[in-house]
Amino acid sequence: MSTHNDNHQLLWGVLLGSLVTASSITLYLNLSSSKKHSPRHRRDSLDSNHLCPPGNIRGMEIVDGVDGLIGNTPLMKIRSLSEATGCTILGKAEFLNPGGSAKDRVALNIIKTAEEQGLLRPDNGSTVFEGTVGSTGISIAMIARAKGYNAWIVMPDDQAKEKYQLLEKLGATVEKVRPVSIIDKRQFVNLARTRAEEFSKDGEASKEAQGYFADQFENRANFQIHYQTTGPEIYRQTGGKVDAIVLGAGTGGTLSGISTYLKSLLPGLKVFLVDPQGSGLYHKVKHGIMYSPTEAEGTRRRHQVDTVVEGIGINRLTQNFDIGRVHIDDAFRATDEEAVKMARYLVREDGLFVGSSSAVNCVGAVRAARKLGPGHVIVTLLNDSGQRHLTKFWSDEYLKENGIPYELKDEDTIDTIVR
Ligand SMILES: Cc1ncc(COP(=O)(O)O)c(C=O)c1O
Image 1: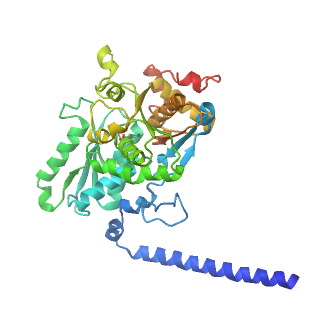
Image 2: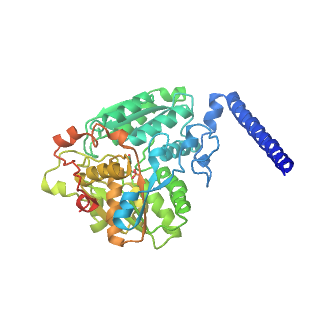
Image 3: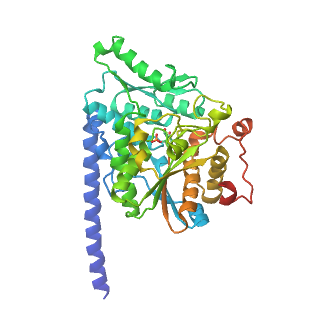
């Protein structure tokens, strides 16, 4: 008996030993072959088609560069919201992307598409310009570094200061401007377009360097990457068992891409927009007209969307939103107070530390659960982490100064937070 066991153990030992040796050799070959790559070689391998292959959600494989870390994010059950509503509320953990948000997908696809169209070539001083409230800029700066471009980011000067700091650390040029209306040529998106044109005209083009305006609001590559990756991932992760999607919209690329993909497979799926205060999209969906009550009341404090929430809410119709507008079944609002308290509730109940747009999404998920009733599966996105919002959305001083109630009482529940 003992001899039989010894032989058995010996056999397993030999087998295990060979496996370990084979894996070590593969690992060594992978590492040594990647060492031989010139920087250009590695840059050429960046490709949104190489987002982790299907099924390999955060798997064991070695990925090739930062782009290998983009996408295939986990889908997390938010226990507190699920228990409180009787629905299964799932948040896609986009904050786990290497640049910290879903915008990594978009930045990679915008740059890759421009390269395919011959509008950008790396390693010759070419510069990607973008007007953004931050997240897209951070993703563009990261991909630009990896691919051999410079990044020039134009931003309104009232965003959380950690975003400017991050951009600078990533080597981007940051141009801060006063928030003004979109009809003003100094508005951050308009100015980014102008800067790209100036760059190409000012003789840089003769040195082959090109200025490329990423234009996330109107660029279809934004919608497309969510259609090609985020939507299919949600379908696979839920096995197609999803009753509703709830999302806020900035450019609208996420909402349009995911809903266009999922509705083609699940015609019964409900798509809900959740809109922060000061944004006109809620009214656009409900009544066909872009309108925010703060315009009529004359109480608007800012030129952009009048909210503490960053990244979502807008007062114009963009192409990326318009592509998927037909799929939106209904819209909800979320106040600043609801978003702030929701974020604090998620930390208290789940240990989940999210940014402002994710908190709005969760308010929307609760409203969707109430509308549909218990037993439904509702998916939303956790766009970025609270770490990017410490000095504004997560700052008690900032909220106090701006008259936004933020204190969560022990007795507060989802029913007192989302009214
Ligand atoms: C943190 C964050 N969440 C959500 C969004 C909205 O995504 P989309 O532009 O696809 O509507 C953005 C857009 O900038 C963002 O920065």
